[in-house]
Length: 353
Image 1 (spheres, rainbow, N blue to C red):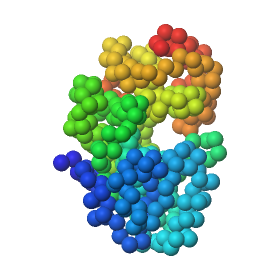
Image 2: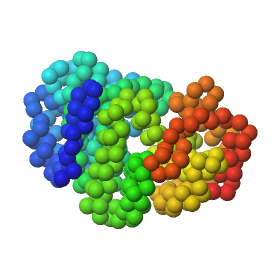
Image 3: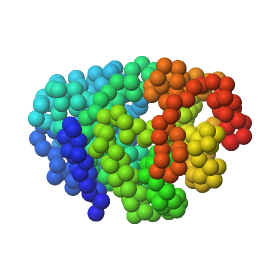
Image 4: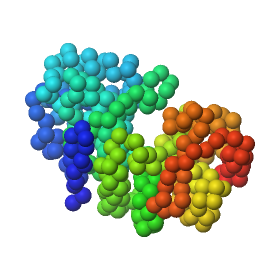
């Protein structure tokens, strides 16, 4: 019902919602194909994958940040080459964002590009990262500094995988998806706000939110796939969010950190006169539900400023923040990290948390 195709400069690709991963894999796999799969998924879904892995060449990985690095990719590529993987063979990624990045980056550089197919198993991957073409790996302690754009050839979304997600990972996925609905406009946002409590327990509602999230993202990536202009609004909440992630050593999951980041962006937008306080409060009522259980009041302002200063979107000493002029009016703005900005951050951390 929600199936669609994404147009890409690299190659167009299909997104299909399915309800039987086992049958789908059996139909799709061909001789020579290789599966790259998260060990946790193998453990949780043995009935689905044990029979398939017994007959298909595969690599099981631990979905850790260290895996998506040059060092982590060496054994993956070595195993592919030593086991006869060829240009006409395909990679199948089964897992969340880290498995996606490992497979996408490997696919983009192996033999100058091979086909790959993605079965996303987390809400973050299903509702956001599975489309958009981005692929990135870490370099030392620097996150997502190396990569490119190389989309899968097909994406199969099976919501059954979400049954085993911890509540925090559901919150994180919903937090990440939220920014698309604010970018899209007032009607979309209030639909999301109303459906959020239901989505946590009703798969049909959740499927509808995932599909609409991808539809919003698709509209932007088809006009700005390489993130040069229009698509940059999707960094809304992310500059602040990435700082929160790093300063909490990733104790705060990505989508929850982004939820705080959107509230901070809205707070700054109020200070600059871009939106009235009511808009911020309306959005915060939802965001505070998403970040519940993950306090960040112990972050030091100076460390937070330092982390913001390392954001890869900055130009020179100026921050490039995505701010809010209203529902559907998210935009990029330059900001000096001066005394005024520091005072606003201090006020936020002292009074808003």
